[in-house]
Every structure is written in C-alpha cells, then in structure tokens.
Amino acid sequence: MDRRNFFQSSALITTGALVGCATPGIAQQQVKTPFSVPGTYIPIVGAEEQFPVRRIYCIGRNYAAHAREMGSDPTREPPFFFQKPTDAIQYVPPGTVANHPYPTLTKNYHYEAELVAALGKGGRNIPLDKALEHVYGYTLGLDMTRRDLQRAMGDQKKPWEIGKSFDNSAPIGAVHKVAQTGHFTKGAIWLKVNGQIKQNANLNQMIWSVAEQIAKLSEAFELFPGDIIYSGTPENVGPVVPGDMIEMHIDGLPNLGVKIV
Ligand code: MN
Image (cartoon, rainbow, N blue to C red; front, side, top):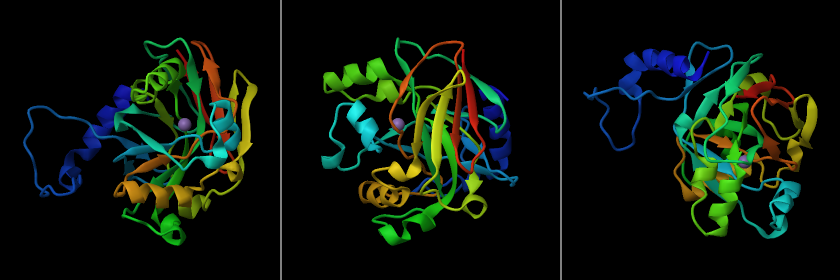
C-alpha cells in the first residue's frame, strides 16, 4: 500500500470518528471544513482499530556510542527531545518492503534504527514507576535524517528541523500491544543495508529507558494518548543512496524493510 492509498483509506476510516478526534480545549462536535485533512493512523496487529498518532517525539543521543560519534559527551547530557510532524510517518506493513523516496536538498541521507513506544494514556509529571503503564504498544521505526542539513543548521545555531522533520522521515511498522510483546528493556536492535550489518546493539544500552523518557517528557509537555516516542538510535548511523535496501530488526517484532528510490 503506498502512502497516498494509506492516507485515503485512513480518511475513510475516520469519517465516522471525527467527533472522537480529541483536541484539548475544543468542544467535541462535528466541524464543517472547506476540505478534508487526513489524520495519521498506524495499524494495530491483531485489531481492526488503528492507532491514531497525535504527536511524534524523538529523543536525541540516547546510546552512549552514538552520542560520541555525534561529537558529544553522553555522561553529562540530560535527555533532549525533538518532534516530527505526524504526516512524516510512512507506514510499512510487516513482511513488505516500502519504496522510500530519497528526499530533496540532501547529499548525506542517514538511517537511524529505533524502538518506538506508542502511548495509550497521557499525563503531566508522570512518575517513573508508573510510566510504563502509559504505553499502549511498541513498534520499530527509522528516524531518517538529512544529516548534512541537520549539521549545518546546528553549526549555525538554528533549529535542525529541516534535517529531521521532513516528509516521509518516519518509516514505521505496525503497533504491537504490550499484552502481545511485553515491555522492551533489552534485546537486539540491528540494521542492515543491502544485507550488510551496519548498526548492531542492544536496547539495554539506552542511556534513558522508555520509562525514563516518558517521565522526563511529561515534565516538559502534557502527554496524551496517541503520542509516540522514537527512543533513539545506537551507533554507526550512516548514509544510503537510491537503490539501497534497508532492513531493520528488534527482537520480538517483525522486521521493517524500505528501499530507497
Ligand atoms: Mn534518532
């Protein structure tokens, strides 16, 4: 299913559910609009319902060796987060390879393999020992990055959004409910390009666990059901070019495949 069809089918699915699209502070009622804007939904394994994506948060430099390869000292840095727009999502069904368009403006396009937590419950100042109760499910995703633009903007002390938050920059798999998978605190995470291993690490090497990320994020933002969190990438990020095939794996989830076109 390509992206356009996915969004079309999503739009159909949501027609009847418009009133359920919660915007805090806005009364729940049918609103007339001059055109329709599709929402973003990710299929849930074993369910007819789809996961509605509200916000995409991403943590930066969450594996020590990756922080070092990015030129920072992982031992002295509190966690930091950025966002991608929800329509950056490119859903990749399990067992398929999605065509992923090489983006404009970059000459150094990087993969970042990441565990993704999908929240079913929100809150502010969520205590660490309650944080995992807010997770609805998990999946895996790629935080695709225009590294040259990210670096150039950082060097100029400008927002790095153009390097991180562009169209299709968030390929992602189906959501697996916690009841199906348990919580992910350890296990292999790897990424291959054209069959060759590039990233190869363990989730237990995260500097900030998923629970800690939820607790920390909720100090800065009120979290809501539908928020998803890209939990950071291990070391050995690197470039891809059109024609390359990316396969990524996390123990306990089906692999994610994209071909750069
Ligand atoms: Mn990342």
